[in-house]
Length: 500
Image (cartoon, rainbow, N blue to C red; front, side, top):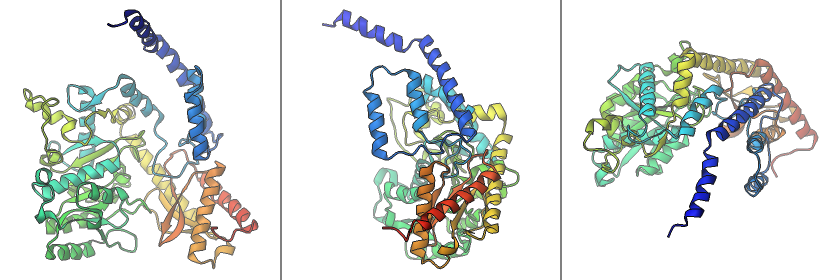
């Protein structure tokens, strides 16, 4: 027997939570708090990173769960006070942008109203938005309308998995239904040696095994070498291997190297091998008249991954998987789900995203990009690429002019790797020099003055920036070098001799 009185009380509580006027009041307070926060961050007032040890942050988060009736504004302010300030012009760390703020508002429409996808009728407008953007990006690649296909997925890692799973199913025939039978046991993927780890992870997930990921040789600029790739593919095929795909980069994460895609495509066609391009970071250069040459030949790829939440400056996550031949779009997942896909309307399968992605329910991830593009036009994305790529060159020239800094490559984009080498470190062994860079970086980010990352170059520790905030200035880059010098002096005066 239902307790009607208790049910009525519970429904009244829920009615209050769903009350539009309560939402309006919260939204107004949210707007005021976020606007004030953004103004302070862009004015360089708070730290870039609000550093706290992990356990302290976890304890604080749990404390809020036990608080008695905190106000909405208090909770939002706590999130802002504890978070990472990517809109700070001195955030120049990972390949995660300071997103266009208004894009978040378009995203919020989908979040509040829970616009989701899987089948067209669940998210008709979300599907239309995604398909419109796939059309526009495919045309930027250089493909003809109606010849290609694509889908949005949650991030470049899942995008690489999706593209390489498609390559496996096309190359190995019945692998989806039958598994990797004996005739596919010698299947391999050839990857750019500096490829993102998600490519090797994908090989493990799709059953090829990470040991069957073969690294392609790089040239002196850390670009995939087409001539050596030709030799490698010929040798693998002569040994009886099935090459599922060659995975090239545009650009590779460590130093932002763009592979010679047109020459790689010629080699792949010669050997009948699927060409996949991880353009998660660099795909947006296609929006720039000055920098699109970096992706010359990308139109020859069979599959491409392009993240809008990197160089198109969208909130995470919004990644596109694009196929040159639209016939391949249904090769990734060959399944039936009659409870979901309506056999009375088979034509709708063309618009059901669940047929194309690992996800069933999928958020409307493209609303931010669609709204921003609609509001500002495509020139915005050209400006974002041009400004940040140009700043990469500006920083490189500052490093060249400084006696105590060493750039480790000539940048093609906004990714620059370098080292601080003061006089006391000139003759240091590699392990000490690398450890010095990492200690510099750790003290720098904990100070909140800047956020940069660390990497390895030639097996030795190094510093790395991705200038992915268009509000960063040349003066900020000067201050970065000055701050690193100050920390270096403190380290050496304090008797630092290496890792303990």
